[in-house]
Image (cartoon, rainbow, N blue to C red; front, side, top):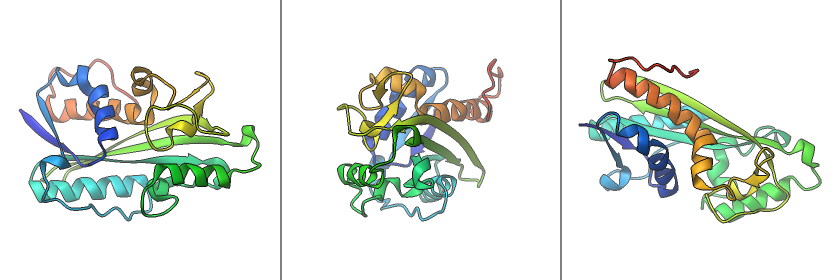
Length: 213
């Protein structure tokens, strides 16, 4: 049984991850742990300039502290009309308190008078896998959408109530979890990471499908 630590305390992310990997994880023996299993690990440093920097910083810190392979994600919202903001500062856009309601309120304020056709945005997720021997691996997923004029829906977390998908005529927070977990940026990144894990841990037989890494 292989162990991999998900380097997060965010149980919203953990639930999404478990839902996305539930069917696939039965294909090979991996025990998923989280930072809740390692209370001695304090707040992780993530002061990089890119999603990739932050994801790997977190994964490497946990792998070094435990001697166990660690996977971390850094994800956020990129809004075209705001020149890519909030980007890597998505969780603390309105301050260090990481208050989702305040973040959403600030985002709407910054987009005041911006017309719908210019409110294009995308969620980005970078997953980093750090092994205790120093090897590093990445995968990335993107989901395109539009910032709504007001929050809608009770599901999800973070910016989900404002992230509108025209193809579904719903925000992320309005979508059923089973749909969101198939089309989200995190789902796309996870699909690619699962391919890497299969190659690394279980090289035979080689998967029939090779995602675009």
